[in-house]
Length: 114
Length: 111
Image (cartoon, rainbow over all chains, first blue to last red):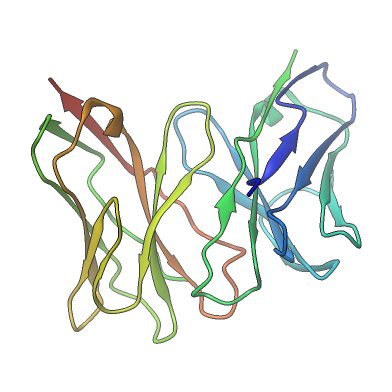
């Protein structure tokens, strides 16, 4: 079975631009979460979506937004990019919101801001 | 959300058993304990999850004492390919979306 897939794998943008990252969850998984991982740190939670509704938001500015589609895939949008947005953006999926169903991660999108 | 404390780094040699202990004093009744492994430039990979006592799968064992305030990930007979960062997480029951990752434990396996 296919795991969580993310696209693109790498992306280079300049300050002030906008970017859209995409995620396809494992088949049958209805929950998608987004994380930002800066070099040397653990992933930081950005958003969680379940059944197309936002179910959680981390401590990130309004420049970050996301949505989930009827097929449970998801997009993360970041506007007005800053140098500090350079990071590995990870998507994770799980069947539901329940604690005994662990999240499974994709390999991320490496975003570099010049 | 319960926070976790684990060693920043550990060293081991090939063929040894490695035990990584994680402290989570404020774990809630309905929280599960989950461990992930991460290699550079890859996403975290699920290793094992448990609620109490002992859980074993094909790659690791997880030991959880009765008070659940700590847990120990046991990796039998490690190899060079087990060199990675290992994260211990405690998930909020009912919603795991906002997992809190610490810095993890960087395990270095030497020949």
